[in-house]
Image (cartoon, rainbow, N blue to C red):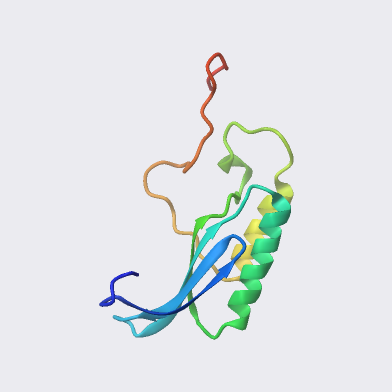
Length: 127
C-alpha cells in the first residue's frame, strides 16, 4: 500500500479506534479503502466502532474495502480459549452482524489459531 507503483494515496480519515486510507490500487485501477482497526476490549466501545464503520462504509462510494487490525472480538465462543468469565453472546452476535451487514469475508489466519493469549502467571495451573 505504501508503494506508489501499487497504490496511489488519495486521503485518510481518523476515528476513535481506526484509521481509513483511501486510494487507487494501480494494477486494477480500482478505488479502495483500507481500514486499520484497534478497539478496546469494552463491548460498548466495540459496538460504537461497528456502528461508525458501517455508517462510514455505507456513506462512501468506494466499493472495495479491507478491514484489518484488532477488533478484540470473537465470532464464536471457541475462539476465546481459557476464558470462562462472562457471557460473550452479545459480542458474538454484534460482531457477526457487523461482518454480515457489511458483506465482509474473513480471511483465515495461516499458522496458529490464536493471535493473542494471556500467559499463566507463575504458580497458576496450566491447561
